[in-house]
Structure formats: structure tokens, C-alpha cells
Amino acid sequence: MSGQPRWVAVTFLTALVLFVLALLGVTKVEVISVPAAPFGWIVAIVLCVLAAYAVWLTVQKRKLPAWIGGVFAILFVFGFLVWIVAGGRDEMPSISLLGLIAGAVTLAVPLVFGSLSGVLSERVGVVNIAIEGQLLLGAFSAAVVGTVTGNVFAGLLAAAVAGVLVSLVLAVVSIKYLVNQIIVGVVLNVLVSGLTSFLFSTVLTAHPEQFNQPPQLEPITIPFLADIPIIGPILFRQSLIGYLMYLAVIVIYVGLYYTKWGLRVRAVGEHPQAADTVGINVNRTRFWNVLLGGAVAGIGGSFFALVSADAFSKDMSAGKGYIALAALIFGRWNPIGAFLAALLFGFADNLQSIITIIGSPVPGQFMAMLPYVLTIIAVAGLVGRSRPPAASGEPYVKG
Image 1 (cartoon, rainbow, N blue to C red):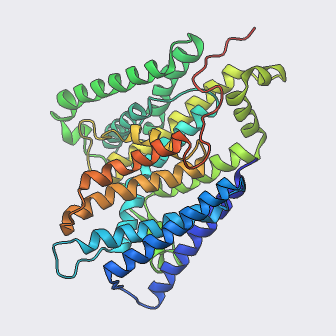
Image 2: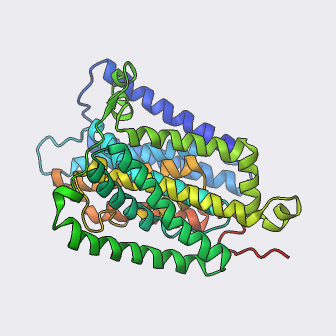
């Protein structure tokens, strides 16, 4: 249970920022003008002071307060946004904060499901490189079954089943036959990509009205909550899959850290021999967790065909499974951490498009690579200890 208070501090800081944004909405503040140069210098000085204070605490071998990282990140983001906007081609360039955050949440939905799938698998010691294949086959199945049945919920269920099928192959080959998990995952990604591309070219393209015109999941507005300024339209006017995303994060987090099932799962991922000694069936626990992770990723894949697009297209997951893996690592194999990391990736992806629109001199490629740089920093341990479960990737043979 160690390390959980850190998330309490992060959640508090996030809630504080959202409260400020809501307050701006209540007072009808639509445009905030900031002098770029003075604001930039002030932010830079404060960031340097925070960094120096963190270094001093480290030299004194004292624990860093959790608020330092949160305040540093918030100031950096606002300073970075001002820098981007100040260099736009327009005389009065601006960024819609509402649109920026809403776009980030939307783009993060499949990433969150993919990273949660990775959490469920790697917490029991199975490396799930096949997230990309699970997302892609989920999207394909949702499109085909949704079109054939004319029922969007049937498409959603088919996507979950498709993700389970990919995970079934991963589980059987890597757990039962002890084949290298990373190799199996890569092979599954290539297999699913080739299979869906072939069926798209030969079947879906030839008969789109029969196989590739799925019904769409319309946004669902939650009364009262959707009327909250700024954050209401973003968080509470989502599709069913968006709400399932919130539910999945909460359920998996509570399950992993506050239930007997979660204790067994973490024991299997950290020390399978000890778990076996106390009567836990290690390989069966791994098997069912990998299947559960596949169902979660499959639901995330249905987002592509049932929400973000009106039809399946070739390789429409576009590498989101690999980005979900990066979010999983950056989030330190924690459901809440993976969720926040996925939002960061979605934020960077959306900001990349906005940079192009406003004509900022900041290269869009810089924003595209920024989350990966942060992931490398996290894995290197420069922002705290980040390690996978001890038995991750290691097959277990009883005896």
C-alpha cells in the first residue's frame, strides 16, 4: 500500500486546478490576456527556485514533498502554452482551453483502455505487447458485428470478445508453452494487422453497406453535472465508452489495491514462488488476468469504429497500442498513473494539431516526441523509482 498518498496529493492538485477553471467559467471569463515575456520570466524563475529547492532537499537526504512535482508540472504547462501562443501568426493568437482539454480527453480514451489492459497483464507478470492488436481487432469486430446486427451494443460486445481472443493466444502460448512474451506480442500485432487489412480490402471495401457501416454511440449528457462550467461538457457529455473508461479506472484501481483479488494479483507479479507456496494458482491467475486485460483493450478498440469514425479503416489504431504501453510505463504500472499519463499523451497529440493551426514556430514534431521523452525520464528513475513488477516477463514453472 506504500506510495498511495502520492496519488492523494496529485488528485488534490488536479481538483484545485479544475476548481479554478470552473470559477473562471462561472464569472464568464472567456479570454485571458497575458504579457508573454514577463509571464515567461516569472514562470522560469519560479521553476528554477522549485528545482533548486528539490536539489537541496535531495542533498540533505530529505523526502521531497509531493506538491513540488505537481506545482512544477502545472507552471510548466501554463508557461509552455503561453510560449506557443505568443509565437502564433495571428496578431492576437489564442488557444481554447475548453477545446484543448476536451480534445485531449477524447484522444486519450483508447489509450486509457490500452494502458489498463497492460496494467492487468503486467501486474501478474505477463508483458502485453499485443495491446495494438487487441485495439485493432476490437475496432474491426465492432464495425463488422455492429453493421451486420444493426446494434451498437452487439458491436461493443464483439469488440470485447475480439480482445479476449487475442489475449487467449498470448496467454496459451506464453504461459502454457513458455514462449517469449515479447515475441508473441509482436507476432500477434503483425498477424492482426495483416488479417484485418486483408479482410478490409477484400470484404469490407467490396460490401461496405453490409459489413462496414456500423451504428454510432451518441454522447450521453448527465443532467446537472454536464452544466458545470468548463469541466462539465468535457467530462459528462461522453459516449458510453467514455463513461466505461472512468468506471474501468476506478474499478481496477480499487480492485488491485483494496481487495483480496488484487493482493493475489500483485503477489503473483512480484513473487510467484511465494504466491504458489500459500496456495495461489500462479498460472491460472495469470491466464484469467490476461484475458480480462484483452476484454478491456477490445472495448477501447471499439471507440475507433463506434465513436471517433463512422467506419473501419486499415490500421486505424495507428500505433495507439504502443503509445498505451508508454503510458503504462510512465504511470508506473498504476491504474491512476496510467490514466493521467494517457491524458498527457492525448494532450500532446491535440496540442500538436493546434500548433499547426495557429502557426506557432514550435515544431509539431516536438510535441509528438515530448511524451516519449518524459517516459524515458521516468523509466531512467529521474523523477522517482519506476520499476515493473519483479516477475514481469518471467514464465513460471511449478516445482
